[in-house]
Each structure stands twice: as C-alpha cells, then as structure tokens.
Image 1 (cartoon, rainbow, N blue to C red):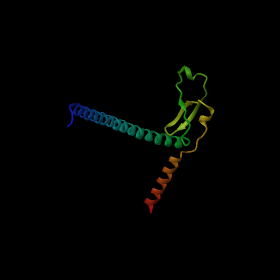
Image 2 (image 1 turned 90 degrees about the vertical axis):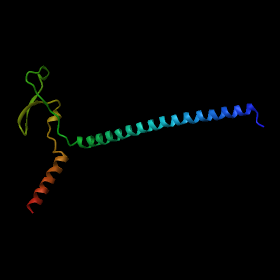
Image 3 (image 1 turned 180 degrees about the vertical axis):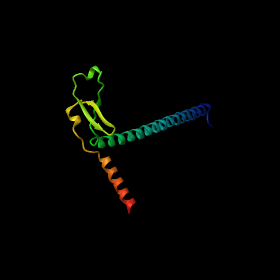
Image 4 (image 1 turned 60 degrees about the vertical axis):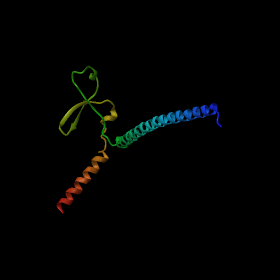
Length: 126
C-alpha cells in the first residue's frame, strides 16, 4: 500500500507541475506579444528604409535649394541677392552657397513624365 507521505509527495509534485505549466503558458503569451510588437516595429523600419532609399536615390536629381529674401530681415544684410526666374515670375532670393544657384539638370522623374506625356500625345493622334 501507498503511505500517506507518498500520496502527499505525489500531490505536491502534481501541483508544482501545474504551476510550472501555468507560468510557462503566461511566459508564452508574453513572448508572443513581444514577437508581435517586434514584427510590427520591423515592418515600420522596412517601410522607413524603403522611403529613405527612394529619397537618397532621387536626391541627386532634385534642384538646388534657394531661400527667399525678406528685405527687412536683419539676418539677410550683407548676403548676395539674386533673381531667379520661376513659373510665376521672378523672385528675389539669397544664395546660401555658391553651388546652390548652379543650374541642375531636370530631374529624372520630370524627364520620364515628359516622355510619357509625349508618348500619350503621339498615341492620341494615331
């Protein structure tokens, strides 16, 4: 026969195993939540990387950046002024760097759009 001490030992070991199972289930749930959060962060980072790579690739085709001049602004005193022609007319602007007013080639995107418009225009006439 089985003694009372052995029965108590068995019951305590069963209880201990149940507690271990419960804690392992809770840990699994926590780990699953952490994995889900990390996967969403990974997706966001991949999206940011894609946006930045597009920005870096197209950055070389962007035009130079020129700031508008406010004639009464104290910080603009002594800076070179230039007149830049834009679609709406002439705008007086300051140079931040001598390199900024160099003519930059039309961006690749603009060239592709122009070719696409021309192709559509030619297709419409045919």
